[in-house]
Length: 503
Image (tube, rainbow, N blue to C red):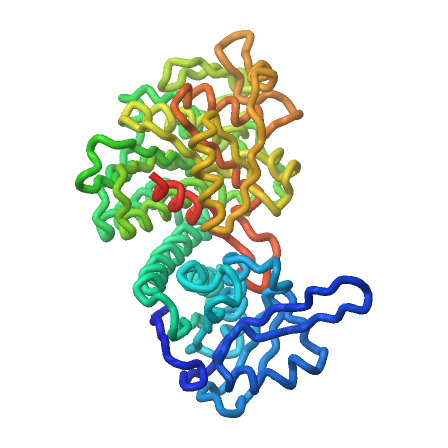
């Protein structure tokens, strides 16, 4: 998608479709209070074109509610699309992100390939200005992605050209910088989504390593991709215990970003679970929905996508990403419940359930990141169904052993618009994963499953400031929404990028 930024009057933008924002400005409450939809622009021609439909009562400007006007008078655009933000008092920068995605997804199936999206006028809501520009571009890219890659009758419905129209009185340098950031982050999130979308036979661990290496070469990152021999050399017994059951060799993917002038500061370690297909191993999963287990590398994809953005945004902090990629399969060489494995750290792990494999690969990934000099850690994984039971599909889970590291991440969420809910850690939960035959077990039983999984990882993070993201309930969009297609979401890319930039 080609993107450009314009500061021209909206009425003069010649385009197939001009999308503008509206909000309900009604401040009264009670049964007699009716919505007051108002377009968030000072352009008189747009206001005039929208006046009749806004006054009709048919359109309420609800969140992502749309209405299309053809041949609007006094506008150079052929169509005017009005996208709602909901109540003005509740509108945020994330509302603008979703509205931009809604506009793009409205245009795609109608054969519209070129469009413009108008940012809210200065002062109309807090999300106006640079933050709104970045969010709009990110939302447009997210909205443009579809998962039908392998359909033989696929018709490319992508938007070919997008113009983001900013107010003439905007802070131009700041808006231009934010626009550029939005393009980088939006493209990087979609890059992660494209990896998650691939089926297991098209994205083996080896191929994931190749895709990561190619991206690193293009973006100027340092990279290494290792396999079985390196795992044995490093004594990554936890990682190998999962890989040993598959005919596909594992891949240990290491990406490094080393900016000039940051040699004495922190080193951030991003660790991702890269299970390219998860059958459950000997503790095999039910057949229903097992096809979705191609998405079990979404945490690894998030780290690769984040590294792409980091390479282009160039923050002044050293960053490494480690993705532990393998399949979890049930062949004759697969590990069995009751086996005891020795992790890279030297800790022994009793295997209670072979379907609790993500924490095993992450255990060695976290240890390796620390060995390579990481001073702060963040991991992401589609780790537990227990987290989905706890939080549903509205929030992803988050855990941390360090309040300062968490505070940085929490602040990043205000920029990313992603929803993470911090859950507790504690000795009571850690007790449940103590093993009678080894040091720890890889499951702590049914209750508090997301927390006990986090406590398992805590053993390997040790005292290093660490954040764990359990994205199992948010990495795959189960039902299409106005602003995003059904399929991979790319969650955590935006938040991880902002967390890194906070350093």
